[in-house]
Image (cartoon, rainbow, N blue to C red; front, side, top):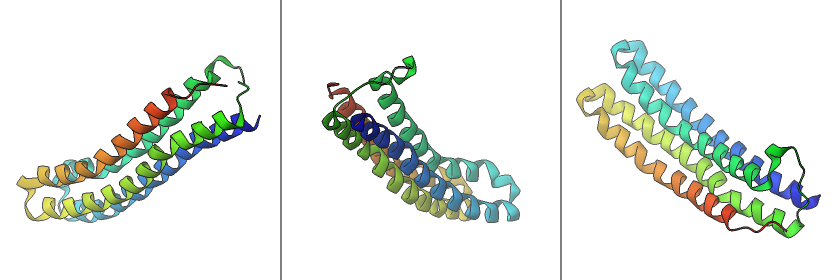
Length: 157
């Protein structure tokens, strides 16, 4: 039973920590974007794109959780009996997407807010702000890939 609890804790951390990062990043962007749009409503589309970028880390956390659910066969309705070592391995495998998602979403939000300054001053260069923010996302994607590879490599015992 302890093994299953540890594995589910890892799954929960994936979605919760990455989700918290997304909430913080999207929230910051929403605050800044509201100021931009209140003055220049025609820039809503560009601002919305920048605000949406930090939301993807929450999705990556959910994908990490989903991989654990699939690995454990929980969708079948059966509760697997796994060792505490296997549960701990699954928990540790979830940490890359959890922490990369948390931190990259927060920092991507900051870069996206800076990109909104480009939208205000040089609207034709808004794509540069999107590219800069997307660079931060690279590390969230790497965290997700690491989590998927680690989970796939674990033998259920």
